[in-house]
Structure formats: C-alpha cells, structure tokens
Image 1 (cartoon, helix red, strand yellow):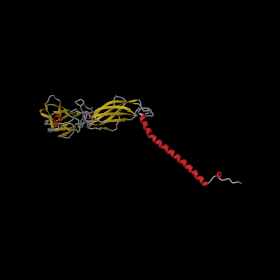
Image 2 (cartoon, rainbow, N blue to C red):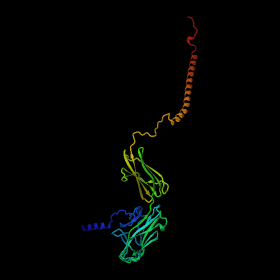
Image 3 (cartoon, rainbow, N blue to C red):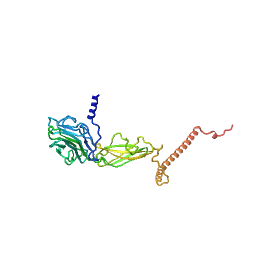
Image 4 (spheres, one colour):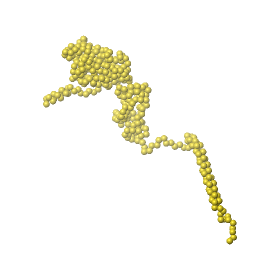
Length: 370
C-alpha cells in the first residue's frame, strides 16, 4: 500500500500539469514562445507554433538528463555542470518560419544564473549563426530579459526561417552553478490578412444571402463563416471546408457571397461572423451582422408586370405587335377566300359532269301522245 502511494506521489511530481497558452510580450502581435512548462522540447506556448523542436548540440539525451535539461520543478531551461564533463559549446537550437507579410521580428529571452558563475562564463545568443548577444555570468540584473531586433541585422524578414541558438561558451568547471532560461520568444508584426471593405446579410427569396468584399488580401488563405441566433458568440460553422481566397497575396480585393439555406425558421434573426485565416494560420473574426428571415408565401410571383395599353411604355409595343400581326391576318383571310372559291368551282363542275353523264332529264323530253 505504501509502495502504491509513493508511486502515485512520484507520478504527480514528474508529470506536469497542462498549462494555458502564455501571452506574447507585445500585445496584438503574434509570436512563437516556449515557457518550458513541460519536460519536453516541443512545447508551444505562443500564438503560433515553432517550426521545429529544440535540438541539442554536445549531447542527445533529451530534456530530462544531461547538461541541458528542463528540471522537475519546470518553468525554465538549464545549462548545468555534469561531473567529469566539459560543457563548452553545448548548445540548443530551434527554428521558426516568419510569415511572408511580416516586416520585423524580435527575439526575446529571459536569462539568469544561479550561484557564482563569474565574469569568465558566457552564454551566447545567435540567430541564423549571427551573434546577437553574449551574456556574462556576472550580469546584473539577474535574471534579466534581453531583446534583439532580428530584421535590423538579418535584413528583410518576411518569409524567412530564423534559427535561434543558445550556446554555453565555457566549461562550467564541475560547480553546482548553472544558467537558467525562463522563456524564449520570437515576436513579429502581422499585417492584417485582409482589409474588409463590406460585410452584410439580408434575406433573398427563401434564403439569407451573406456577402463580403475585401479591399486587399495580402496574407490571406481563406475564410470561415459562422452563424448564431444570438449576437454573443458564433455557434455553427456554415462551411465544411475553408472558403479559398480569390485574391491571395493581392492588394486588390474580391467580392464573396454565401447562400444560407440551413434550417431557417420564419421570424428568426440570425447573426453571422466572418473569420479570415492568414497564411500562417492566424485568424481574425469580423462581425456580427444580422438578418431577420421571414419564410416565403405559398406562391411567389417574381417579375410579373401589367401595364395599361394606353401608357406611353405600352403603346410602342402594341403598335409593333399590330404591325406584325395585320399582314398575317390579311394573308390568312386571302387564303380562306381562295379556298372557298375553289370549293364552289369544284362543286359546280361536279354537277355539270353528272348531268352530262345522265343525259337530259325527264322534264326536258318531248311530249308524246298516248
């Protein structure tokens, strides 16, 4: 029983709790970030995901053992001395793909040290093999957050891959002291995937027509459309698959429409949200807009018009119709008269032939006395 209890307590210590996503350092800007809240090298605690996991140089025993590790207490990455080894140039690297539309990117990390590493020990920070900072083992304050503008050194940043590397430059000398890294983060600006010019919803016959128009789609891969019977939050996604951008990467927009026929109830008001999805997967929600649906009547007449024949618009049409019709009527009358005359002549000729065949009638014979 005691063994089971001990194992349960040990498991509770070794298995970290799931943590919520951390906020990026700059409000409104996306980022990749690792707060080392898990004994793993694939943790993503920013708005976006790193392209790769952390990769060790100098050892390959993972985040739980060795010089480079995430301790059981969690919340930091360490470079620590291992008895009998030389920790010089041990490093860890992770990559991030910067969105194509980004104009700038900043690397931030919180670095400190425990004990008395001294001014002869250094931790180097590089991006794409270019040194951005060398932190001393006697730096103050301790710990401190360091910030480096990547685009100012690396040039145009959009669409590039940044390889972040932390390197312990010196042998730690079998001391109990160590480096601590509380978090590593890369933030970048994110121009809006789209510039939305118009978004509307209205009933059209027996459905609701949702329309939106973009002014530009510089970083857009598509849209999702949501509906709800309340303006509080979206409830139902109407599209099964992403509605693809018709102007990806373009400064020229496009007009989109969506016909909503799904389970509409007469008299109900529906609210619609539009979500754009950037090329990096970031999303922005627009709306809501609303439309009240009134069910169609049993018979719907569309485009039916009746105009008086005396109206100015009707007279030209009637005149044209008569002009076309009168010659046809005259021709028909002429043909009818011709047929009637032909019948009369044929009847007369037939009687004449019959009389000729039979000879003179009794009434016309000479009288002979008895």
